[in-house]
Length: 475
Image 1 (cartoon, rainbow, N blue to C red):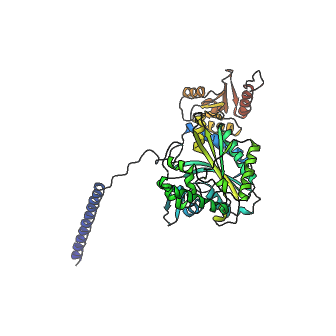
Image 2: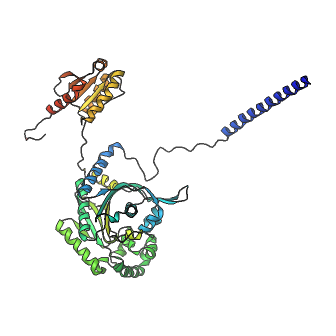
Image 3: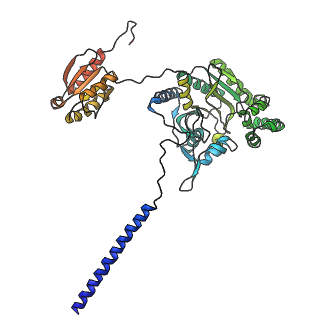
């Protein structure tokens, strides 16, 4: 019996080994088949999607200048910064901007999330800021509430010079005040921002499109006029005649421009309240001596605008005009989004267009401070010590350059020469052990060795003595 058991055990082991061998062979075959029929990987395109681009270091001085000027002037005018998400629920923009507009009908990036939410990349900033105003109870704050923001917006439009599918805007919004002096102040502020960037030859196009009371009768008059000229309109404007007739006034097609030239003007159909409001704005602009022209065809592309609308145009020597931004009043937006009635006004600037215009007019740029000190090190111990020395210099407001990772002292000193620093600090193996630093004054050519404790004071003293004073007394 014992022998029989042993035999059956051996057979069992053989069978098991056979099964394992078959499994192993099957795995190898399956792996080979997978590799054989593996789908080819999609090629990585080494470029961003059409209509989007990189902002390279060479362009950053312009962008930094714009950010610096906008932030400074916004704070001077009493604005607080707000940042809203790039992604919002799609119906926020559809309801605020309005169906029948090019943005909603053609240009929004709308998609469903994995959770089933219908969302959109923001095509403009004001709607999101209005949503935040309601959500966070800003209606209880002292009026007017002034908010500014900068960031990317997305519109699926045909890319062209100065217009990208991802572009950047600076936005300024004022909530809770209907006095026309706010309209004039924002136009003054827009003028200040643009001229501070070196773009001087500008003009404001202004118009009033009235309020819902007087706009209804004006639109009826407008529809009647365009119906009589319908055969001369482009296909888009024929559709706009049903959904948004005022947008026909803003069409860029030649035949529509000719038809719009003799169309009824909104400023001739304003109710007494809107007429008085617009009259006061023009008086304020005259008082401020700001360059403006009444443009009866200006309507802007968003449905939430009421009363005042304006755009900022830059002109070149040949008379060509470049739109840098615009805005207007939107007294019913907050109410439309579910908040209480809140008069409001704001404007936006296209930061991409501002950069292009600054380049075109050769605007004088803010020159970033250059390092006046260079820190060179040689050897592993010197590298360790140099990290602390570098941190101490920066902590004391001494802008310092370095070339950590470069092996030879000669190559580091070449970098120092190229930057044009006034002082080079050298830490070698001996200095690292002695807790000292060699200070080389690149202006006078002198050199001294100081202890690490005295380094900061010694550097400050040399930099102070190196300031060259001109005969006129300026630095």
